[in-house]
Amino acid sequence: MLTSPVWRTRIQLKILVSFAAGCMLGAAGSGLLLWVASGLVQPVPKEARVAVLIALTVGTLLIDVAGRADVLPQSKRQIPIEVFTRPPAGAGFRFGTEYGSGLRTYLPTAAAHLLALSIVLLMPGPRAAIVAGAGFGLGRAAMPIARAVNGTRDRWDAKLERCLPRIRAVVAVAGALAVATLAYGTVS
Amino acid sequence: MHVTQRPTSYGNSIGLRQASHPFMPVALAIAVLLLALWADAALAAWAAFGALAGYSLSGSV
Image (tube, rainbow over all chains, first blue to last red; front, side, top):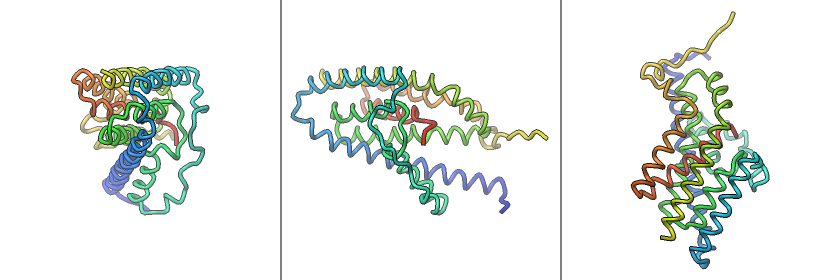
């Protein structure tokens, strides 16, 4: 079926917006679940929790340097193909919800694990856990958004592939900095 | 015949094509993170930390 470029752009925009909203909602849900799970470590003194988190941060950094994120716990199940049988916007939203939750996709770096550990061990409260989750969803949605905005999809994919090792290294360092500062704020 | 994909007009017309480099979301999130840590805005720092973690998973489904 032939459609005009304007109409096609509108459909793409609708799918992208619903996908991003789904990503943020799914990830915020995961953030909230992690906050609930953090109740289990509440009896542990905060100094001990921070010490454990710092040790685990070093561990995740080493895993990322070695490129062995596959040893970390993660779901082997993929998002089912049936998701795409819905109308485009609904499919985008449903796919985004599952994609953003981080529970049904392959995790090639330890960054998501570090974020989850930080929420559980620093116990920042439900608002911060939801905001961190929504940020995670926005980060996941940023790739297809930047790709669509660029317009040169094949070239953009090649550029991303070249940049990925550097992106992951920078994120690992920035993540460690964020953990250190947020942990300092928790104990001080 | 070699066919090249043209940039979308809406992205190109307002200069978004140059701003959509794969490193741009990382740079933005780090800027927000540093600003939030400096301003002691914990919620913004959590959001930026989350965004960085989410974007680092790009390329995987």
